[in-house]
Length: 321
View 1 (cartoon, one colour):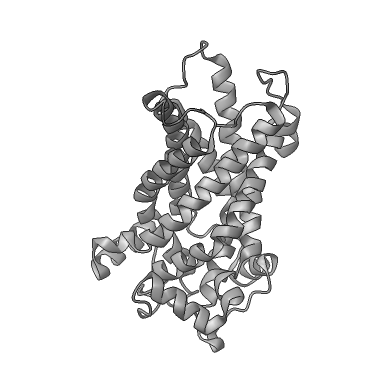
View 2: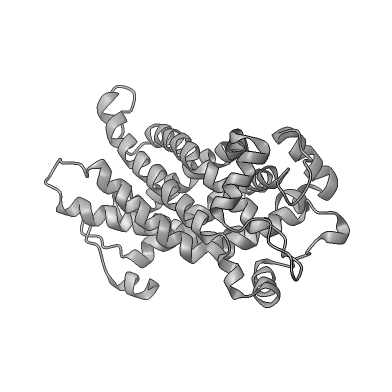
């Protein structure tokens, strides 16, 4: 798939060609840069979302308390950066597909538009959804590893799974629980990724166009950092509101313990997890971890999209999105 994408070239306005494979590499690189900065917030988000679920008792009072307890229990590096290798792997699977495929499709559709006519918003939503769904399916195993390794630091010493790295985590899951377990919670993961990618990528592209037209005296450069930053903040807020409920369900399903022989799993599926969570903790449980999720998503989106846009412009003379 990567090789085929690399061979299929997109001709840019200035004559430079950029294929799907190269766009995926740029997408992964931008995502890795963002992951280094934002990984600790992702760890806190996961632990807040699984805290108080059917699998255990409530430990944290809020985001600040979670950060303090995590550092006190495991230290800064072990506590806030567990699974960073899984986060990098996720960028080479999910991130590369999501950003690379969207940028590739957007450029293809742009080339068919009449001069000066922007791509309709509904097409951007469709392209973002497609890119997110493909990337999510490919990246689900690394997402599982990321959640497991992040949640491991919350467990008492005697109950820690002690995964050595992301490869060890994936191998142990497939060996001890079956290969299918690597796609555990795939349905809410794919739904979340589809909604997240559609809202983030489409809103980012649309906001850049509309804000530039509406405030020409404020945003004087249509590919400048101020316009990109404002667009990513808006896109991140919309995406977080849309995707957070699925994120809570996904995290709880992926982190539930393996049932003993003869026992039923805590959640039988996405719907069961949704109902039990709302029934047991109220509807606002679906927005658990909203603050760290937004605080993580906003800079992650900002860093990754600006990096991809700027790297693409460096190579082709024009931004990716």
